[in-house]
Length: 157
Image: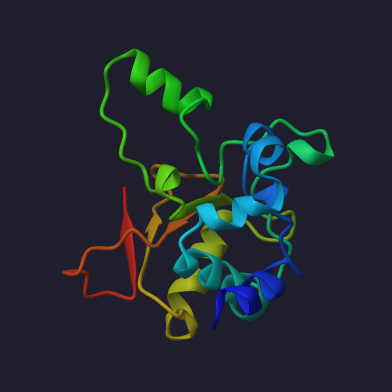
């Protein structure tokens, strides 16, 4: 799918402000789409439209909520700054535009994980999903896969 079609399609389910922080949106506006790996965007589209088929929440700062670090993480966001301040190497898929954390008012994270595994054949690319031990109330999904990954859905902790 070409990038214009992909962004048009995913925009039916996600506004770019749901995937980036306010700081990133203020600087980039809709140009922030370029910060994301197209494989992640296509995976998000398939998750929302074809697999989970429920509303998904990434960031909610636009509607007055506190969430703004669950999509793309820039160098000034608190999670990245804290790692930097403590001299901790932080190579998260979030800073590469390859990961999001999601929740849904209609489906808990464990059910989302199970549905993704059950319908893995619908995924356009192999993914990594954080297990319940590390992400009990949200779904972390990314396309930061290794060329050695054999599973369509790799659960990691």
